[in-house]
Structures are given as structure tokens and as C-alpha cells.
Amino acid sequence: MLQQFGNGVSVTGSGSAKLTTQLDNEALSQVVDTSDEWIATRTGIRKRHIAEEGECLRTLAAEAAQGAIDLAGLEPGDIDLIILATSTPDDLFGSACQVQAELGASSAVAFDLTAACSGFVFAMVNAAQFIRTGVYRNVVVIGADLLSRWTDWTDRRTCVLFGDGAGAVVMQASDRDRLRGFELRSNGSMNSCLNLSYQSQPKKLVNDVAIQQGTFQPITMNGREIYKFAVKRVPEVIEKTLFRAELTTDDIDWLVLHQANQRILDAVAERLHIPADRVVSNMAQHGNTSAASIPIALDEVVRAGKVKGGDTIAVAGFGAGLTWGAAIFEWGK
Image 1 (tube, rainbow, N blue to C red):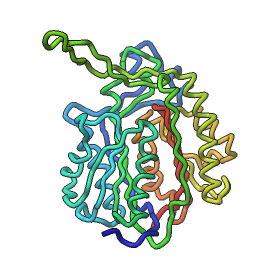
Image 2 (image 1 turned 90 degrees about the vertical axis):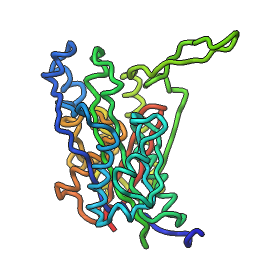
Image 3 (image 1 turned 135 degrees about the vertical axis):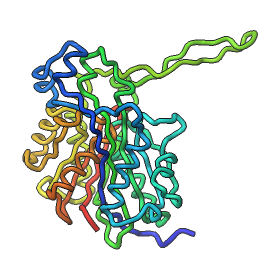
Image 4 (image 1 turned 120 degrees about the vertical axis):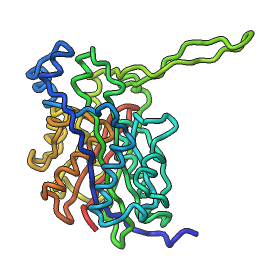
């Protein structure tokens, strides 16, 4: 039986995985024809973290989730739902159930959600609906990707961008609704701008019956089109979310964007007239970690003591699909 409708939503904990292996621009220049200056001036990235041999998405996602659960003052047994936003699962059938087992969250339902770099924002909005309808009270939302698995390390246009990582938040039912608004968008006509596509070859089974078998190909991207898309659509979707929340940019304490390119962050903040000291940027240390980038960046400022209870945080993701979206919430219970 559903509980009474009308539960509010709070974001009460954050966490992230600690990857020890780093690949800085100088080291990367030994792999592909590039340099620290070339990468840093175009992207703002100085290094990225790479999952070591033996590390997998399941364990990194579980580490991030456990950190968020601890900060929220909960135990894994308190969790009702786990949503894992990822495009790089350990198992193509999904990795969320593996994360549930790793955590020991035996009461939790778990499923994967794929929306690439927008995945974390899409997953937060999904989680909020389960909470608001009274179905679940304690939800872990994880963004985790190991893009090193699908990066062409001979293509300097893309390999300089991507890193591995995992971050998470806990969302809980609350008497007061602290999720102030959201807006999600998709445009499949621009899908070709950013791909991790499946390519197959026919294989004859018997007589005239053939199947298609193959594998996924490395990431390809039209960087110019993605930049134009992001600097136009991301401010728009944040403005629409502010309108729904009956807020203005002056009310935003922290802007946490998908960490794709420093020039995109700067352009979005400038259009919204948000000062640089309110824009969270950690891409110099992490690169683009897809669905993990927003929760990792959020966790860093939370654990640094910069985010205070009641602070208004705007998050926005954008990427393959193409997909983009934003959400605005107040931190804490």
C-alpha cells in the first residue's frame, strides 16, 4: 500500500570513490601527440583518474554510496532504492544489483539508468518521484563511469578529456520539500554528435538465417557541436528550472555543472551572471567522468565544509543522447 502522497524530498548525504591511479597531461603526452599546455588551455584539465586493474564499477560505486549513506546518518539496511546512473556497467544487463550486494543493502530495489553525462540529474529526478509518491523513503543515487574502457587512446581530440570515477547522494523523504524544481530534455536528432556505438557483422547460422554480432566502438565526438549545444541549452534549462522554483540566479549558492570543459562552465556562468566563486569546478583534477562528475564535485565542496545546511544548489548535466537537464535543491534535512 502506498503511503500518503505529498512527501517532500531532501538531499542529506554525499560520497565519492577514491581512485589512486592518476594520468596527468605530461604522462598522456607519451601516449598520444599532445602536451599539458594544449590540453589545459582548451579544456582546463590537468589530470584524470583511471581505474586500476582489478578495480571495477561495482566496487567504486559502492564506495561512493557508502560514503553518502554514512554522511546521511543511515545504514545500508535503511536504503529502499538504489539508482545507478552509468553508461559503462560491468555487466551489460546492469550493475546496480551488484552494488546492492556489495553494500549489503538487502532491502533495496536496484536498477541502472543510462543517460550518459546527464544520467545523475535524470536519476535524481527519478528518485524524487518514488519519494514523493510515498513508495520509498531512503534512496541512494549513484553516478559512476569508467570511460577509460571505451576511450580511443590514439585520438587526442577525445582521450584528453575522459577519466573514471564514482559519486553518490542520499535522498530522503522529508516534511519539507527541498527539491525546488527540475527540467529534463532530450534531442535524438543530434545523437551523432557524441557516440559510443555498437557495430556488428552478420554471422550466418543456417540456410538464410543470419544474426548480427559485434561489439561497442570507442567514443567519438563532434566537439564543436557539443560546445555550441551546451553553452546554449544548459543556461536555458537552468533558467526554466529557476522559473519553476520561483527563484532567481541570485538565490543560487552553488552551481554544479557536468565537468566537461572549463570553457563551457565559464560561458554558462557568464550567461547566467553567476560569479565564479559560486561555480564548482574540479575538472583540472578529474577530467570528464560522465555521470560521476556532478556528484564527485558536489561531494568535494560538501566535505570541504563549503556547503552549509539550507544552501541552494543548482546542478545541470548535458551530453550524449543528446540529453540535458537541471535540478535545484536545498542541501540538508
